[in-house]
Image 1: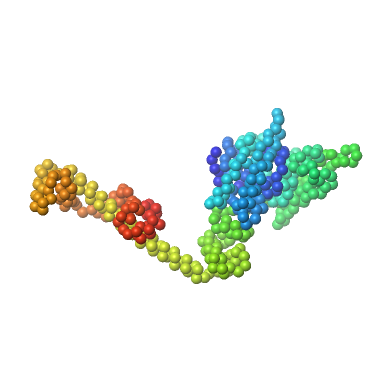
Image 2: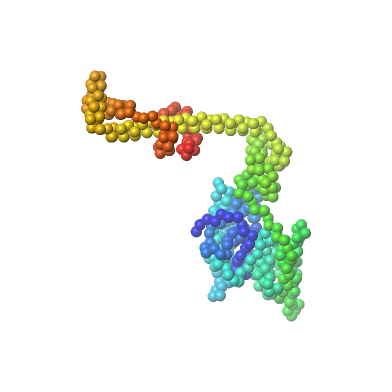
Amino acid sequence: MSTQLIKPKRLVSQSNKLTEARYSLSVGEQRLVLTILSLISPNDSDLKEYSIRAVELRELLGVKHHGMQEQVKKALKQLSTRSITIQKEDGFLIANWFSSAEYIESEGRVIITVDAKLQPYLLQLKEQFTQFNLSTVASFRSAYTIRIYMLLKQYEKIGYREFELSEFRLLLGVEDSKYKQFKELNRCIIKQAKTDFDKKEDGEYRSDITFDLETIVTSGRAVSRLKFIIKKHQVKVIPSPDLPDSEIVDQFIEVGIPKESAISWLAEYGEEYLKEKYAYTEYQKSEGKLRGSFSGFLVSAVKKDYKSDFQEKQKEEQQAFDEQRDDCQKVYLNFWMQKAKDELISSKTEAILNNLEPDELEEMKALVTKELKEVGMYTNEKSKPFIGGMKLRARKKLESITDEELEAFRLQVTPPTLKEIEREFDQKTANKMELYIDEFIKL
């Protein structure tokens, strides 16, 4: 099962059996489940692992800024206990929505695995499935409204849908102790859904369907059956903005800046500008000079372009860092070049010795032997002085090495290691070089 890291698509597709399944989720949990389902393509052959940013998860679940990790952990743990019951032709299936949820703090993401038992109800859907826009259901503030919307959306083409009152309560997950009288159920759930369906934003309906309700009364004047007349709205879907893949936007949201503001500022000011203002705000906080809240000061820093000696100090530190890096690079490349030169000369010297004519070789041996005997250092032809003398004589036959030849050979030579640097230079130079050596090796 591979990890799928993609932005939410606009549509949720699920089989009708999943639409009619029985479960009870809070509005935040329902939004999260549907967001994950929107990542699944009905044409996929297998479920994947799906990734969602922690800041988006926090918004979906209504988690507060402070202690987010613990709250997310608590919410996911609670959701992992939520079961779903799907009616099958020969029985029923009870499963959990997610089989695992892994929070990766360093990446600010949660990796979620959908329970494999749900695969037949989410993949390879050719018929008898319900499809709707994620941004529509995400705008509803009630879990009951979301459920009613999905149940009616399933029958949109038919134009109406009927429920036994008891069946309707079960499908919505209404507890037996709540809304015992139909009057209460109608006022608190059905009419609220109708209000949500008919709500407009900027002159446009947020829901693409609405309904009128007809009740069927049995003897004793008790409502026993409901008939929803489904009507279409002329709607322009206004999706919520996708969260850009930007660490600074995540940081702004983490400290309480609204998502819409963080996204618009990224487009207006650019990432480097926002990073600068965030760093400046952190600096003011560390110096005890922050007046008011962190987010409030950050807003002012962005809008009023706060600047200070801190930024100059940052520039100076960066300049010093760059200069040190450049100096280290020169030292490293020079050392690497010298290492390459030594190896190239040694290689060429060996080639000269191996290619000498027999009489030339014997003549050179005689000269080296004579020189060593004159200074009392000759023992035999396998001694280090003799071998060194031969190489020295052969080196005099070398032609000059061009810069192009040396550079080409350098790229074939193993880059100097930190231990080699330590042996060649002092410890201080080696410590500096350690900061950049991984980068220099690629030069």
